[in-house]
Amino acid sequence: MVGITGIGSGIDIDSIVKALVDSERAPKTSQLDRLEKVTTTRISALGTLTGALNAFKSSVDALNKTSLFESRTASSSNTSVLKATAATTAPAGSYNVQVQQLATSSKVALQSVAGGNSATFNSGKLNISTTSNNFSVDITAENNTLAGMRDAINEAGKDSGISATIITDASGSRLVLSSSKTGAGNDIQVEAIEDGTVTGVNTLTSQAFVPVVDPDNAEAFVSPSSDTGAAGVITKAKSSKVTIDGLQLVRDTNRIEDALEGVTLDLVSTQSSAELLDGKTINVSVGVDKAGAKANLQKFVEAYNTLISATSQLTGVVSLGEGKKPVTGPLLGDSSVRNVLSGLRNEMVKMTGEDGVRALADLGITTEKDGKLKLDDTKLTSALANNFDQISGYLTGENGLMGRLGKSVSGYVAATGVLKQRTDTLQGTLTNIDEQRVTLDLRVEKIQTRLYAQYNAMDTLVGQLKRTSESLANQLASLPGFVKKDK
Image (tube, rainbow, N blue to C red):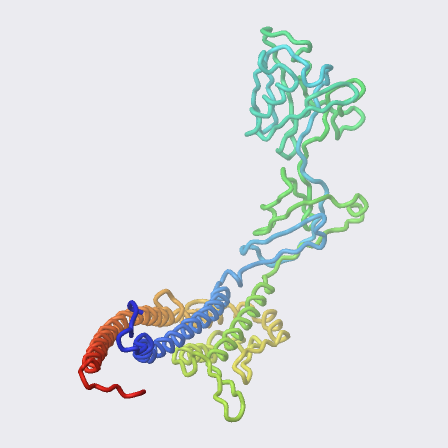
């Protein structure tokens, strides 16, 4: 509304202008609304199609890898004792393994002392070593307590894999040193040298330690004593011992990577003495990973069927009954849908590859009446068992089925593909619609301004004419002999 209108003539100018403006705006607005709805719907439909095609391409790309058909599996008949994994270089085979001994690391307890963490020692140097590592710790007035020595050892030994803790038993408190290095000969030894600079309650030499063989057991070292506080070995460093098909192996760790080509054996525990005595073994089997290839083929079938379902909905026609207009999919008759499906079907029916596997049907994958794929699990399992190498040749590579399917789909879903170009064009249409709405608003505003100017001018003229008429009537009424007619 422009001010107060219609005073002079009594005409409802606002209603008239509004009706004229609305009649000018309505057809174009309706046209733009319809175009915007159709465009938005098609953008959404193309997004759905792109998503289904990308999911299908992912399943295709997963199958188009020769490494999938080179993968190996390794299984153990007793994973609580032995676990096995295989690399692609591992040849197929079966092995009988015995786990006789696990590799362990060294742990020793030093001489205990009274006074707990605050017990002090003479100053000097501790030289701590194993076969593979050694380092020194200076004991000074700053760290000559039991706790200070512990912290100094942990700081100096962190790169050597040796750490220290304090344990208090009936005899007092003592340092316990642990090594992360497994394997025979890696037992911890401690040399203590005093320098006479600082005096503590305890001699530093009391912390010297060299493992002593137990006279009653040639295979073991003397253990620490809680009664006397004497130092000793808690855990002896040992190497792992296994036999593979009767051949003895000794290794410094519980992960053995150099015994069987491409196979890693992880020792978890030893077999019982009874099992070893009876000659019981653990079977390790190495073979091709057929389960992985089968799972990816199943995903391929599922992704293709999902694509068919999506395109059917996007291009379908749903009848609502007699006399009613059917509901059609937003991409009904769309050439992109027809072309991409046609391209995929043409590739899938081609006969390629080697004897044994030349078509999807040889893998138990066939097409049903609705265009979806059906997978015969029994036939696929048989093909994987009998023609595994031929399957790889049929599916993988640039000229393999998956390579051709991937190339066909890429033309549509790539960053500069058909669907992206079409979506960009439709987004341009939406932008143009917004621009047309702005232009329409400006044109309607001008029309409204013009109409108000015209009607207000008319209103003013009518008002002036009414006032002139009233003035003339009053003048005539005042003339002599003028008789007013009764109303």
